[in-house]
Image (tube, rainbow, N blue to C red; front, side):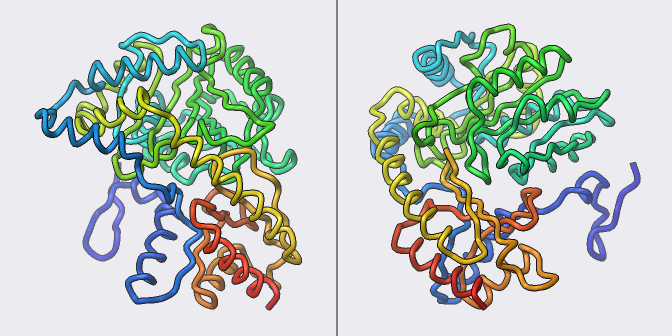
Length: 397
């Protein structure tokens, strides 16, 4: 493979040169720079809860350190964490997993990375529904695969089995699913999810189900995991899970994967040569997160529910802006095409918000949806209200 030049001096590899920088991290960096300069910035970009990690989880981590649990662990994670994950899925979703099908990872992102790079060869196609989390196609690029995007706007950004069936190519090997969705917040109904998995089973296609926002759904939608599907539909399924959102543990970098034993063995090989094991202290904290009181999850969901209701009403009152109702996660994904000036893009709109009103949002083009912006309501209601006022001023100029 021929190296490509990055800047003046560094010969970056072709695959890395083809990868795009993260739009979500770029928004976070912009907000940090403005705050450092003393600017009153309204940051509606963060993909992380504005809540603190629950005290019982922090206490478990402190106790683990005091007990000397600061050494390497097995690559796939401690027995205690594997057991806690297995018991949670059995209790909540009626799913049976064995220890050799469970692996702790350094965040849900590593679980997805492990799954893709252990499966995809150069020339393989990977189906990715739009809008997508910005990292999905970049992992596929790194693995040498080709991203084949599924257009979902016709159905309000909710994926269907028919859409999947129409997009499958002769080289399709994998699909990456994400429900609740980042960035749209839309949720695939359980029956539709099953139909999608049946289509994949018919064609021998693998699936990664990113369930990072598993617990954050709003009635009438209900919590659903692909783990609850019949075993014959899970043979080619890898679930990528995370503690980051559910337990406000973004900085702890702890997640997990659930997949068949052969796939898990391959992923463990990759992880063994990259990060080795997830942090021992974070694993101890994750055990407490699963086994301890779950009150904090309900508290966060109730507050997100309150913010979501206010935000959707406020956004839809802005002339030219349309915002469908998200059933999960903590994002709104409004269509701003009616607010754009002649020849303007959603990136231009986001830039005007930043420069004219010191308000950070994430351009939808980074998620494969030009004309939209992502707004996170993982921030206080007061800041949301200020942010919407600023968005309205820019939209009306």
